Image 1 (cartoon, rainbow, N blue to C red):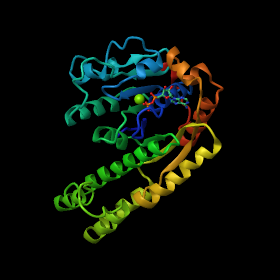
Image 2 (cartoon, rainbow, N blue to C red):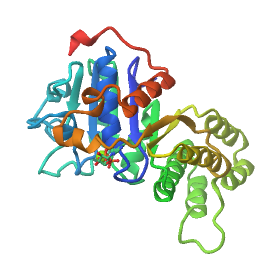
Image 3 (cartoon, rainbow, N blue to C red):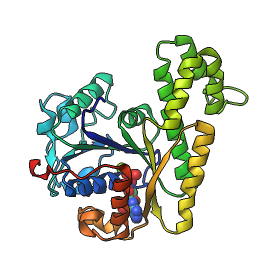
Image 4 (tube, helix red, strand yellow):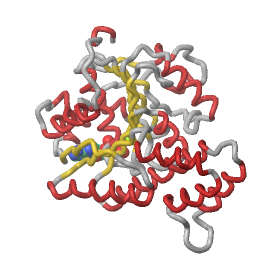
Length: 311
Ligand SMILES: Nc1ncnc2c1ncn2[C@@H]1O[C@H](COP(=O)(O)OP(=O)(O)O)[C@@H](O)[C@H]1O
Ligand SMILES: [Mg+2]
């Protein structure tokens, strides 16, 4: 396991404004309250706002300083937050030199994170289905896809999962240039005629590489990359059914077994919490959102730790 004994979570899902940053911040506070030494990584480069949500008024050191070498150690680049046990790697910056980090810069960040003195690392990802968001997501043992029960959010989450699967497929067939070309052509959105569904694509690949394709199938059905689904801003119980439908569609067309982790209710006090710069679970620990999140942590199977004294 590349991360050693660290829990690494990533919150993604394609669409902007569905509550990813709020979830990452509240999850961070909750796990810190449960004794974890938590590091929140604001990976929404160019539109960072975790510092505001967690109450860090002035992020005087950022990821950019580390990547550009102005800060030598990632540990020293972390910012304290008002919440014991929770530290932040901020990306708030007027200088957008790392808006699109290259491969070497991403590797430097990952090495730095691996060496951090932390139990749990949470990535807050940018909206969109581009490679950078997907790559951070697929490296995390706990990949959380956050959706709202709206067709647009589910549509974007579908594209997110599809791109995740395709990236994985490309990695598996990295050394088979012809096969990679075949996959690229088959999934080219501009190609004429019927584009094969992902499951059809797997069947076509089976003819070329039976053993490897079978392995990929197993990985997806067992969800070794552990892709989880959370439905946010649920206003009525029947809206949660959108999750079941979504999971069925993903299984049918993309072959992946998504695990439903739970739902978080619409919470009218969420915006006030952001204005007050105090995450909801710290401000209203008994609200439905906080209770839902505690249940989600239980469902994830991440046990409390006894190391809060470190941060
Ligand atoms: N469960 C919720 N109930 C009510 N409002 C929410 C909830 N989750 C997020 N929000 C609100 O949605 C908006 C976008 O949230 P944010 O976390 O910034 O989304 P993202 O990071 O996905 O773009 C914010 O105004 C936030 O207060
Ligand atoms: Mg965000």
